[in-house]
Length: 498
Image 1: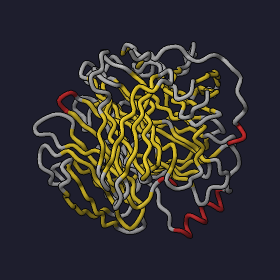
Image 2 (image 1 turned 60 degrees about the vertical axis):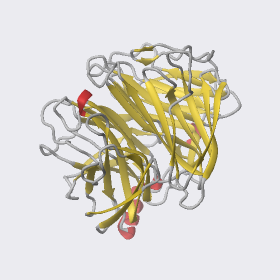
Image 3 (image 1 turned 180 degrees about the vertical axis):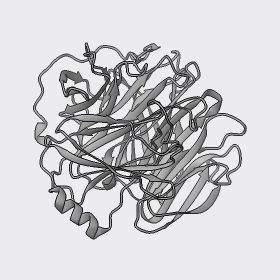
Image 4 (image 1 turned 180 degrees about the horizontal axis):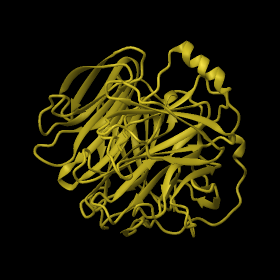
């Protein structure tokens, strides 16, 4: 029998004991200096770079409860940040400027026009990461709760891959795309949808400068019951968000459509069967060659539970709902998919018992093109402890190597900057869950830094018994090892509401 069974319970999941305490080497040397902001601004002007990313229903009035933005400065030096909100038409709101201390995080509840729908960008000369948290009431559009990370402009391009898009027959989860134009001119967007039988459905739209289109099945003229994938492309940079909305249970989940694939992707938190339940959709990003690979599912101990070969036609997908015939009510672990062509992945999380949905984008562990991201250092910019009913956030860390991983985890209070460290050992290919131990009363918002001597992938999850849609999760982010990133680092959000 698999050795990683656990009971689904608040605050999210009890995966068992943490690793033994051990001092690990200092990875602070991964952080450093960047190009001066003045030079970056000049470069931005010279190159015509733009900001942005997608929002919806961001103008809700009253107390916080619709959207919140939390930023984390992973550099040691203070970094200025400029946050700009854009209406769907591309019209900007007055920017918000701030100075974020080195290693600190801060949360923002923006004041926006009532009913605001649009996008947001965060511009900084340093490595500033971020997460949007959406908490919608039952009558909101969308309802439910979701979290998703900002995306650095270095990770975006003129193409985006959507592993799964749903159009329900009558009720149930429905997909929605948010397509944001980051170019300096209007964008002619080409979309090619492919259903699971291989039938193609070309679509085309126009998006103004800094504007956004929000597209569900009806707007795309896709028939009820459509289930498939999509490739979205244009001549300039775009950001694409992939939402799921289920109004019948007031549930909402969100992820981003990746612009780049990898030869290895990871799903650090995967529920094998029963309730809760996870599904991984793997998409081949090659337009001409089939992708052949294997999907490996590991227990928390690192034991390989199953290896599923797959072959995916160009731009098509492979859906993995977990092992067939599991004798247990559910098992939990993590999934690694490797292939001979670049692939991307989307993880869908569902719970009938808790009326919940939570999605995240699979982590690219081995990129198809060289990048500067260090897979040994992951960050969770937004975590909670008892905030608005959200219990203590949990961090699920998968060791992607065949050697033990020695891991330092630091929890930093957004309010005080107080850091609480812990040390873990994760077995080869193993998975561990960690959380803030004995948090202070002011640790309602905090951020997480995970530094390892081996490649890792992580997901941050949180639970709230007081809501209908009780779960949120997002993939932790990597930072660059390069200390002088040419022109400004910009991060992009798919959706924010106020």
